[in-house]
Image (cartoon, rainbow, N blue to C red):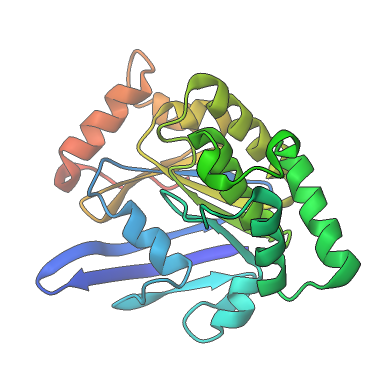
Length: 246
């Protein structure tokens, strides 16, 4: 459903992403892991069409993001880091606005908004202004806009960063509920996300993939089975790491 082939991105002399390739199929939740500055967000922005690659391709449900961006984006839901919204709007009005932007009208528009409010556990705040909500509820509101059109591919950049344990639990439950029907990517530097929701993980460092495998395969690299140790070894010395193919 999602195929990334040799994506590269330079900012002047700086090579932020140096040839990233991977694929995600329906039913997979891929953790895209790396330390700050590794190239995670730049890669996500290229996949979602917010940033053109210097070279390489991103294909969503058979559509090239570079050559068929409208068709590709119809198949895609995106929750960016620090997800933006209109703070003065109430939750329901914001989602009705997003539904209209997506081209939904009348009863279908209202049906979709009601459905994502239920799915995102927003019933108790649906009529409250977004600016009055906790970070967890704001994150869920932006999560709702990302899935309103029921996309086949869902990409989330740091979806639980800054949330308290209870808020993280709710967001992860929502991800698990949708996992069977979608290809999902979670870009994060939080290792606990791998154990919580991911079926596979790609680790990036210095703009390159240094590991690609299931959580069990990654843990097997350390005698004590500690993912944090594997992560540290791979990302602190990326030039000497071998790429693992899962």
